Image (cartoon, rainbow, N blue to C red; front, side):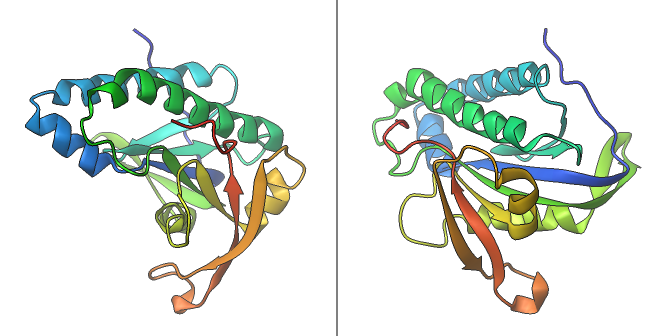
Length: 209
C-alpha cells in the first residue's frame, strides 16, 4: 500500500491549496444514487497519485480538506518542476474523472476540474491531537486565492491564482499556457484592499472533460 511521505517544515514554504470543482453537486447525486463509494474510490486514487508524485518533487501532503488538499513545498523547489507537477495533476484528474466518475452522473455539473491557490511565506509547526498542524498567513492566503479563482467570467477549472511574488520567483520562466494580471478582494486579508495576483491557466483549453 502506497503511503505519503511526511516532511516537517519550520520556516518558509510554498503553499498549494487545491479544490475539486462542483464536489457538493457530485456528492449529492452519487449519494442519492447510493453510489457514494465511487467518490471515495476516486479520492483514494487521487491520493495514490499524489503519493507517487513525491518521487519527482518533494512536498508534504499537509491536509486533506474533504474535496482537495493543502500541499507544502520547500522554498527551494524548482519553478519548472512545480509547474510540471500542477499540469500533470490537472491532466491526471481530467482523465481519471472522465473514466471513473463522469459516466455515472446523469446530471454532470457545468464546471468540472480543480482550482488552485498558491502563496509563499513562513509557517509554524505544531502538534494537535497527535497530528502535525501548521499555522501561517501563507496558508490563509493560498486558501483564499483558491476560493477566489471563480470570481470572474469563464470557467475556473484548471486555473490557479498566484501571488505576484510567487509568480515572479517560481513561474515567470516556466512554460505556461496563459497568464493574466488580476485583482481580487480576499476576505480578511489586506484590510479588504485589492490583492494583485496572477491567474494561470494550467491546462490547455479543450483538453479537459
